[in-house]
Image (cartoon, rainbow, N blue to C red; front, side, top):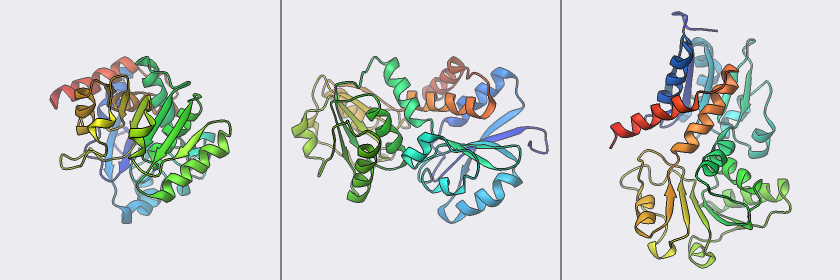
Length: 287
């Protein structure tokens, strides 16, 4: 399936999506292979999600697309072909492939993308205490990836206690030997002295967003990872740097989950270096 111009179309759905850098790395990958393909952003308001799945996909002849906030959970209901085990485990999907018969298969590359980035940074989860803020769609994949890596303890906090409990129960179900706790408040972060702190919420994307934690809870030796990559330096990451922590934004996770998505759609080996350069160039423009 292609567009009327013969160009294969891929994309990203979410609300909002204007901050996304995904198009830059995927279009660079298509150009690397000389593919007549393009990656576009589709900002879909909540009331338009059903229409996207029932009409837009077929009117635009999409070949595949990524799913971001807030649709990683809701999109699963629209999948009607193969669904990867990790989607079923997380109840969240971030990559959809349109099959030749028009049915939709789903995968989730977020968790593996997260782990590949940490590995590249020399950060090991095994035996460490991990505190994660957020229990939504993206957080689920990260939490199960952490649990699969054998942490000493995983603590989860979300402002919505039902989300916290839901993710806690999921980790206990699939990883019964992992020590996991539902943190009752963010204040417990100060008492737990974790080795790794992860922000898996959208808080920090806007300049006006508060910092969810207190500076005195940070210390040298703590690794702070913010899944947000735009802006490159959230207020949390600035605070972490000032406190002497190692830290990173989510650009590496974006790169590796995107590389895995590219391979899922095309069957080709992702040109990771090409995709990384495209992202770094875009980040440089924003400085």
